[in-house]
Image 1 (cartoon, rainbow over the protein chains, first blue to last red):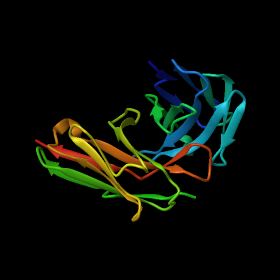
Image 2: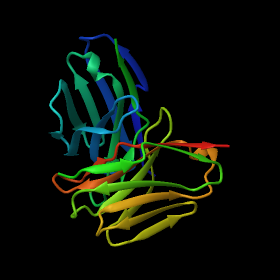
Image 3: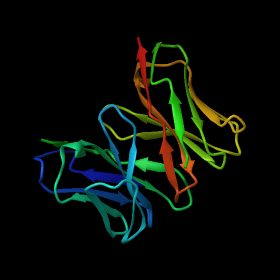
Length: 112
Length: 113
């Protein structure tokens, strides 16, 4: 069966510090991968999606970036965090022939 | 692009009652409509979905209905239990981009014992 992992689970970082969040998927090949951000009590904002290694599409201009160095690994990064980057970051995967998206457990980021 | 509206934003029911959450979408070309349940501090969980060639789908106490003409779909939960308390999100496929989902703003369901 397929599983999706995210780490760390929680993170507290000062403004201006770098960020690296990791997502890995097991049990499937060539998935579409997605990064979402969820502000407290709000909906899901799509940040990036990827259909293959090295292929990244950005949905919202911001100081975040994403990379996909391996088929089942998706990384969200920032060189300098802003207070507004605080939120709950969710990774999701989808098989290429289906619209069913499955989410990971999320990373709670607090920028202080 | 696709736009999904979800109502109500909060819903309080007594245990055993039914709960209905409604969503409307804007693009008639959307063809897949999932529902997610998100418990506090966790990632959303896919609980049921429906495709545009089906009008209704049921899975035990939950059901989803789709009205393509009116461009709306609904989640029905019968015999609600306290463990049904969570935030529920609807979504629709975005036809302006590659296999993306557009989400509603969520409904916080509270089931009181």
